[in-house]
Length: 250
Image 1 (cartoon, one colour):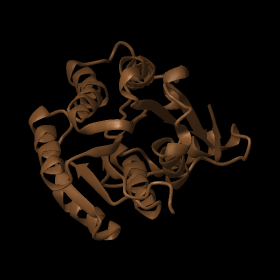
Image 2: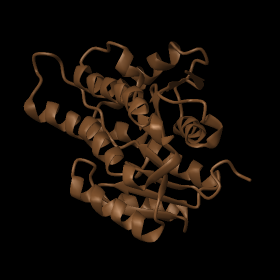
Image 3: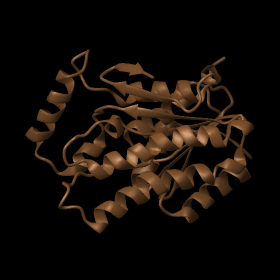
Image 4: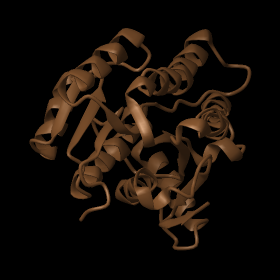
């Protein structure tokens, strides 16, 4: 039997990249149904088509609590419960101290912090004993990369949520863990509108400082998330797993 056999999962931000790879891994591991969300309908429809009939797409934005209410109302009506929540939706944007704007600050905090809060809090009535919540953090939460202060701060908040929410929910036997990817090549990098040479240079540098001399892959992160979602990780709660350059460590 696959380790996620019969599980019901929700993955936010699953149009592409880590979210889509994780949804696919959940299904490969036996999940009965995976609900995937994304803001852009065309991309979400394409993602769902690639995942197959056990995937259900629900368009929505995690910064809008009403969209999450609609998501969980549909889940409740169709299957009645949630076993796994992967709060993955988020984005990164760089800006130097001295050039921070309200738009930059509000955008990152609304999506990467408030969006995670609403995603998890609104799922709680549907999560029973043995449920698993995985939060998408980042290695930048513990590093000081130039010009990434707000993004790093938002992911540091997510790390804190994993620890504190694990304590909040310990009486309900619901696990909360975080996965912190390193540099992962995903379609999101094309949204930065950076010169190709600059992106390639950054990835080359990131690869050069990892033990395996390469950057990470979205499917590697997905496998770690699937492990955290499984009953095999029942001994882990409030943990953070780093996935960088093909190596995972707690």
